[in-house]
Length: 208
Image (cartoon, rainbow, N blue to C red; front, top):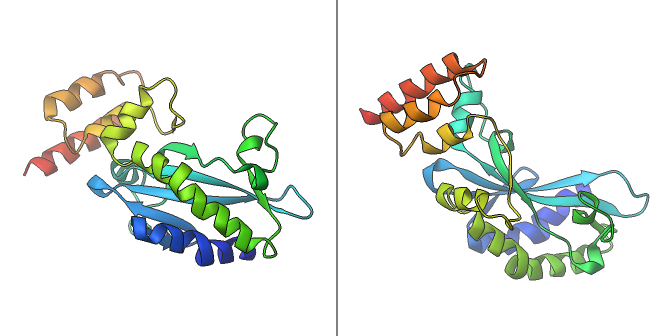
């Protein structure tokens, strides 16, 4: 894990800093409209005796979802990928693909012998910024774009999150009537009464 952290600090973070990303622990994060975050995670898999195998995964952290899941925390921690509602892999180039011929999730994994291959991996990452990473950022740069990706059959962006997702996406923009219509669709869910009460109070507070 230290080798991965060193790679992120020395190569990934500098490559994405001009595009607005900041280092957040072992990951990188981009501030989005509505106080949402786009997080680039580097998740290591202990599956190879020689190489460091890892995924690069974008996750869209939704502020309204974070407020809901931390509702009863007296001192909520900083928002992280626990509030993700969508995710997408950054696919590896052939030279750093761990298992390119296997199905997902194996074909999404990057592999390098770190720190020996740090410079070569850093060069591959910098190339991926233009060819893979920034195009994915554009797909996930706002709630509106993300909702459009959900409706696109060929999109690489995958849905995550709760059954309340549609309500959470609209709490900051929708009016009370729209929110009530969405809440009515959740009438049979066991947490609906508590969630509905919170959503109504959120909309009321935003209207003041």
